[in-house]
Length: 125
Image (cartoon, rainbow, N blue to C red):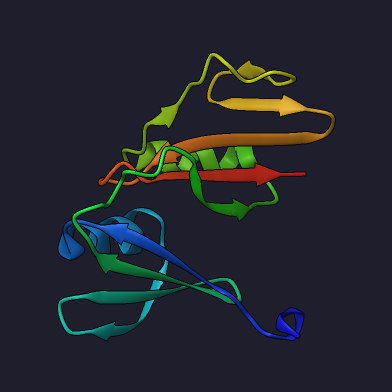
């Protein structure tokens, strides 16, 4: 049933203007829609990401959005040049860290946060 339909990620933010700048300019996503001062929709590959205004933005303590990238080292380097700071976690069983990138069994991953503290990550397999 639902396996035949696209899904859209929804992410809470406190300040849509600040979020728009981060997702468009820093991450390079294309804004495709807006619903007044409450919702912005961005395109990312073949999927969409809705940003909506909420007082609960950044309260999720788990990864909210993941991007599959072919070259994680290059993506991390590019994002760092745009001011993105990557997260380092000490309690990651089975993963080893080299700089900002964690690795395990052919998978590489890196985590960062948006301006509201939402946890985002990159993965390369």
